[in-house]
Amino acid sequence: MKNNPTISIGIMTAPSLYSRYSECIKTWVQDFEYIYLFGGYKSKDELISLGNIGENYKSAFLKQQLGLRFMYKNNPDLDWYSIVGCDTILFKERLIAELSNFDSSEDLFLGTYYNQFSIENTHFTSIHGGPGFYISNSLMKKIIPMIDQFNIEWYNKSQSGKLNGIDYSQSDLALSFMIKKYFNIDFTPMRLLFGDVSIFDEIESKKENSTSGDDRPIGLHYVKASRMNNYYQKYK
Image (tube, rainbow, N blue to C red; front, side, top):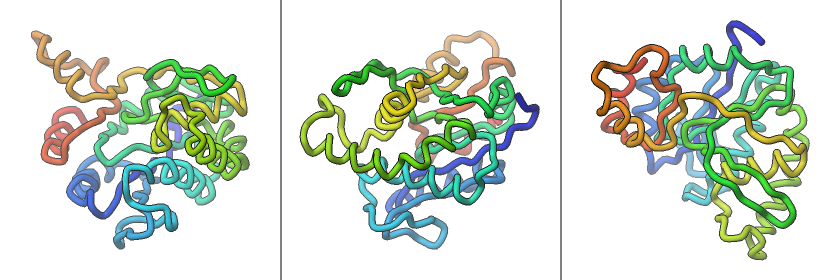
């Protein structure tokens, strides 16, 4: 465990989502030292192109996979690695405090629950990738050499109909499947990650008093660009 763990954050986005990712840049992105905005082949100057992988929704899978590899290659000694979308907001101070409860020298995959799935003979629990997942340095060392192999496997399974209704673009499901199949590792639950910001809003509306420091969010997903700054200013 480490008092001030280091973390690399990647944001999956696209030129057409400028209004979203520009609000991220203006708010929470400025708090992180190691942060990257990933696009595909049409990337603007402020985005890192990961190659000819497209800019539509289906590009999310490769932006996640290749983004993780990019971040690890550039900073292989950090404690944690994560990919989120540009409709997510992370709160660094509480995120770092929470990650300090875990040991990045162990094989850990942190996140929040989404659902149970089965692909062929692998049964696994998927994280909800929206509010963020966190892969330890130890586990990243094992994942990186397998990424190309798994990317081909995931594509082939999606084309052959072996994903049991799961879409190729569902990157969080894919990552959960990869980690379970190759390393038999299940995700470890992490607190205060909200896959849908409306659920957090509903909880807040029922409270008589304002949110205390102990239950303020670490990650919120489905945050509209027009509300990004409001959430950031209120809960940072």
